[in-house]
Image 1 (cartoon, chains in turn green, purple):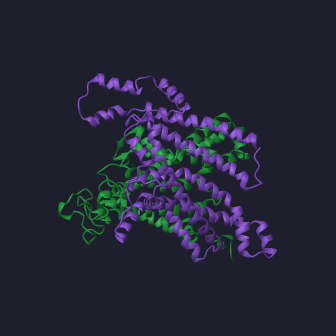
Image 2 (cartoon, rainbow over the protein chains, first blue to last red):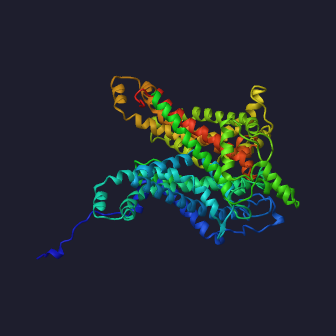
Image 3 (cartoon, one colour):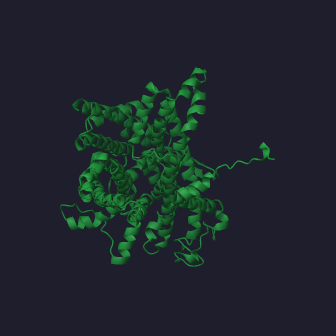
Length: 296
Length: 318
């Protein structure tokens, strides 16, 4: 005799979202894999790097790549491979932080602008228009010129503001349009009818619904931030020596020596391209996966 | 249409004023060294206070900020961009001597991008999910990732190792010696053009793919129109709108690409001028250049919107 307790139900097998993502988006997973490897290399840089990135060695100046120095050495005899690995720390830290700051502020502005509408929306949109009419690097350079340096825990906070600021209007625009649709939903009316405060409606009912576009843009803008950090450092207005930074490795003395020692510029450049490539691939797939309608 | 055009033109004024206000007050309100401090540091000597004060008075930096702003705006309205605080020459002159070079590189990069992007994007869309498509897509995603200044260095490296030749450093106007001029400027145009063409290729591909789903494409095919004509006449024409937008918007951002690329190729253009002005806190120069770029950007946006109505008779503004 079978009782109700003995009956087992064959539930459809639920695969974890990670496995799903890998099977549906192989290219995006490749990007994710590269990102994970870079993050690990950055986190464990002292163990991964074969040499001290700051160590000057006048015997091995401008040495070509060898087993001892896989990417060769620069004009101070510093190991390029170790500097590229330590550079990942700078690139990823600044990339993530500035994207986080820029996207979060942008998303909040977008939600508030959509929720209140009317003159608030109008003013916010005009201000965003103004910020958007600067090319990214021009805006970042102007902010750098204005704010100077403000280094906390080895990271230049003002550089993060300079890189994050140009993202704000773009994120605000996308999030605003999603939030506008959500504002018209019946559950928002219900929340209002319950007498909830504006703060509660925005934070508990609107913000969770714009997380998808927020996450997509967060990843996409890490790529832009890494590229921008490299450009600013290359111009000598971003990260400064002796901090290892990929953009910095392409500027200054590298510009004088790279025709004799091409490895000085080839590997940092490959690192920048690979990082941006990986974040773009992952961001694209994440967008297709989470919400095919959004374009950034 | 006319009413809409006038309205759009009038709407540009507050945006431009906003840009002017933002740049002006950002430069002056924030703490930091101004040009006088930097000059003194460059001199490296103890300069008496009255000399510093005199210099600030000469540059108008001692006036209240509001007065400085009003003076600047009224001067701008009269077409006077002011005097560079660092070189002492008129800003309009400093920009004028460098504009030709930057503009030529920008135009060449645009031309290059369009020539490459339209056929590649179309091919990629027609042969969707074949190896042709895959290769084109990988090349264009890579184009978004490779920094233009690094690509520029690689180009120079390539020229040196293969031809033992480096592009000339001094600028020759195109009309004087077109060959010499091109041999200098084609390389930076390639360096910034790669990213540009990558963006345009991706746009062309997705735009054509979208248009090919339309009913009129099916109708054309059903009529028995050759596939080549379907793509060229019905597909590409209708797919051009978003492509035009991207090309226009990227043109404005090309200035940004030039800021770094001019550094690599030792070109004395607008981008280099901007970097120098930032490094020297040359307020008059920075604000004029930023405003110039913003004007370009806003004008291009406006022209794109107007072009829409011309290219697509379905779009009517009212």
